Image (cartoon, rainbow, N blue to C red):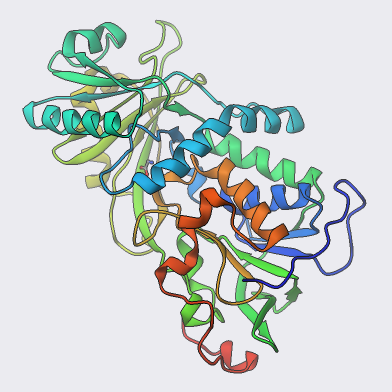
Length: 412
Ligand code: GLY
């Protein structure tokens, strides 16, 4: 367990010049929500990131799809996903009220459809799993699917209607979280963190940045998304086992003149690949996503764009008429069991908030609450105990650590 946390100050009091209680490494949505919630609890908080609000949220579609993205073997994660989905309406309303920014939160539901007999068998299995898990979803015939979404291809053979799976615009979410952090007095250091510093007594003490500045803090949260395993100086035993999983995503623009092309998110598994179309009220249509294990490569490829358009066109033929406005690739932080790593590590003073894989946007509200709890009490709340970083073998006692000066020489 971490050492006792710092005594919180009263939220809203003047920004401190003293060493922060918490330094969050990584200013993506997970790092930002952690910083915001920590500052709301009275912890003096800073974030180190060259571009706060960037990262995977700039690419993600923003489906809040705990039910339609359920996978076999992920029932433990499902509980956390559902807990976060339940918090979304209030979370979005709080952020909007605080910042005046519309997050594009839409409770318009999701329709998962099947194009052939294999897809239908796959969807039937998903439906059975959802029912065993006590989730609400309704099986529809192809005709019923087209009644809901008239632009669907005539070949759609059936589908699952899930009204509880919603959406948000992750870019707006990221922007609002930056604003909320600023209002809460979070200090931003716009630079890369290069190395964790570990002091005497085997405790994380802060980071050294790319410009050579030492930033000290009472506790350090590593929230670097797919880069979380690359911060130098983190002892091997607590290095998060995250890897980048590339997703290419397209943005198209829907005409406003003839009513909406789609009323809700439509998704399918086509030839074994997931494809989804997320219509925003702004007229943006997000089409995603590939899933590629290619390291930190974020190249948009002709093959990736072709496959997404081909599969999306099989679902909704009319999309080929739309302007293609943007193509982009992002990196999901994959973990060995597809679930996040949250809370204290075996290195005193170092906590993790990473490994959210396909669910970073969905898990943002619960991550903020869990991390604020861990930072103020030193413990994980019950709902997050299965997601302790220690499940990957980092025991409570660290092996003998080298002196802090040697840690800086560790290879990444
Ligand atoms: N959750 C959607 C994706 O990871 O592509």
